[in-house]
Amino acid sequence: APAGPALIVRLYLWTAASWTTKLLAYAMVMHHFVPVTFWRVLAGVRKAADGESLREAASELLEPLILDVTQPEQIEAARARVHEHGHGLHGLINNAGIAIYGPAEVVPVDEYRRQFEVNFFGQIAVTQALMPELVAARGCVVNVTSVGGRITQPFMSPYSSSKFAFEAWSDALRAEVAPYGVRVAIMEPGNIKTEIWKKGFSYKDQLSGYLNDEQRARYGPILDKVDNVLN
Image (tube, rainbow, N blue to C red; front, side, top):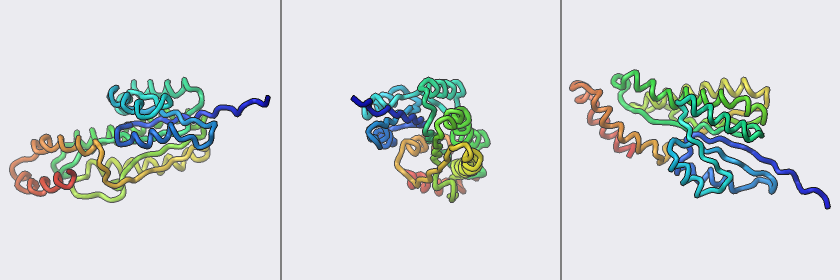
């Protein structure tokens, strides 16, 4: 009898997988574009419980990984796990992000740094660590930026600044790795109801503590409206 078709395994790593991204992760592991191609997804999560909920909704082809993009040891563990699969990395989806907002004159510089650590430097660290595996598979990098990386709204300077930077870096990376068969794409979604905004609501009290009396009189009513829009 003739031999059966060879199994083709395509490996993808997705940072900051969540309930909102569950549907797409589910589609990736359950929909085979050809009968002999399997998409294995390494889903980066910060909590083990989130990983289990993702796996229950998908299949054994989805493997949760504890991955905080600001923690070098967790990035290295993810790189090692990708290497263990032995097929290279066909896709990297950089989706991690937080949202910090407030008046540009008020938000402390350390808060801008915290914003960039996740939305910019963390993405660079993950991509650099996995680039050899991407080159080996002639894979693709998908960087989830934002419409906020094209248009800046008032009081969103920390978030938008990080997204503008991420887009500029993505553009340079795209040109640099194209000769080696690696593609780079960006996604610029608009406002989507995800956990990132719920976490942003908890930032309101912290932001209030940064305002002096003069700034509170100037910005307080406007920030209440911003909160209503985000909610």
